[in-house]
Length: 293
Ligand code: 2HA
Ligand code: ZN
Image 1 (cartoon, protein in one colour):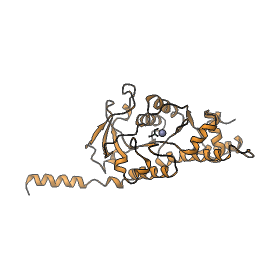
Image 2 (image 1 turned 120 degrees about the vertical axis):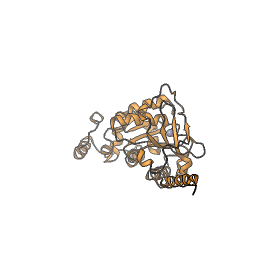
Image 3 (image 1 turned 90 degrees about the horizontal axis):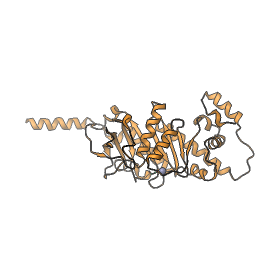
Image 4 (image 1 turned 30 degrees about the horizontal axis):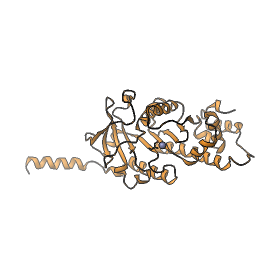
């Protein structure tokens, strides 16, 4: 065998050493979560987006981290005002702009991308996916601002998730949008709510999405809350895992559903503040005491 044959053979062997990306647990988690959220009716059309910070070493088992397919600029933000230096080199799997959650499972390579944050605000380096020339979600800068905010509070935070859950959205139209009162109402709707999100939910007024302003406002709320309602639009959630993040939004949505099923009826019973205090004491969780009473 000639020298070039040896090189080609070695190259093929290196290629063969990577596992199939479609079998990666993080790709499967994205597919399953998007399918689940679509099935629940929370993510119509291109509604919703997810970003999930991955472990470089784990991604390296599936992809050549030196192979950058293309660089994608950040959209909708003024680069001078948006600094994601703390995330440079971090790798995320993320849903694509204009892509439908409905389609992720059947074609992850078109609807999802794996990107690495490039230095000097130069956007992101595409390592896999967005096969049709696609780009990261229009909410990508907001996601990155939220990751930075949550990582300061919880170094294990990995997931930021945005969705349009039906009853949560419905509740926005009929309930006052005050954080204390909204959180308290949610806590009253299911026994476990105060244990699942003892910090309550943050609320932003209606704002234009896809902008620096809403990103900064959401990230500011994320210093105190893992859940931020975007009035008349949807919700943002943050967590260590996909399950935790999904579970937070799912629990709010369940509570909002109970609220919407009962808001027009006379209320005969409720979970009172004394009961909620017993719950947080039993589970030993820190909660927003000023949201009770
Ligand atoms: O990605 O949900 O907020 C589509 C949206 C924008
Ligand atoms: Zn949205």
